[in-house]
Amino acid sequence: MKNQNILAIDTCTEVCSVSLYTQGETVSRFVKDVTKSSGLILPLCDEVFAQTGLSVADLDAIVYTKGPGAFTGVRMCVSVVQGMSLAFDIPTKGFSTLEVLGVGAAKKYKSNKIAVALDARMSEVYWGVYEQGVLMSERLAKPAEVDTLSDEFIGVGTGWGAYKDALMKKTGVSHYTPDFYPKSQNLIDLYLNQKPTCSDELPLPTYLRNNVAQKSLK
Image (cartoon, rainbow, N blue to C red; front, side):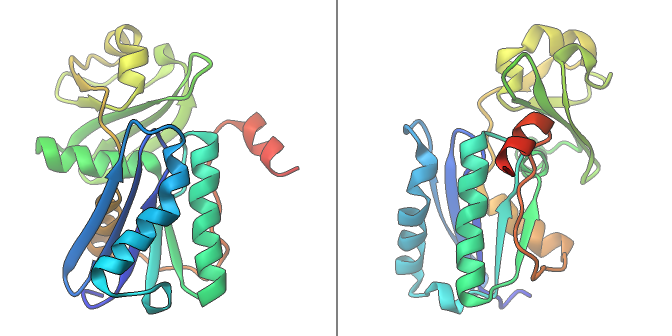
């Protein structure tokens, strides 16, 4: 697996990032604070391919964030992966946005206890508890209905900026970073460390909010 060429794509939140792993090295691009940053995904892919001298046809696998997150960003990410996968018969593997955030935060803060909250609008958060290297839970919840944790946990994600008081009161967490975002290189880490099996099935998104998911299928 270490000798594979792996493309990683994330556009599920306010940021857009792409990483290409080849010959044991990772080349990455990360864009933030740009209107409709998910629309930059193909140019960023072109940049990492140009830097490494590879093309889509050289890929052994594509890994991606499948949601939850911003509706347009999730759709964009999955659509790009679908197109590449179908055109070149490349196996894929999707990971939860919350797990990617958890992995990144655990690595940065050297903690095995991460409380992930993404602002889902409508006074709700996409909530996940990442503990001991595993995403223990993933759901849509009101800030006052998330898990009761402890001050050992570190909170990350935009939900901590939007609903910090309610989340702190319910969880017992006092240390948090709202402007913490998923990065595609963490997808590479997940893929290499967990050694998951790629799938030939069509990549699909994860929304968590039923009414949005139902509309997207019509």
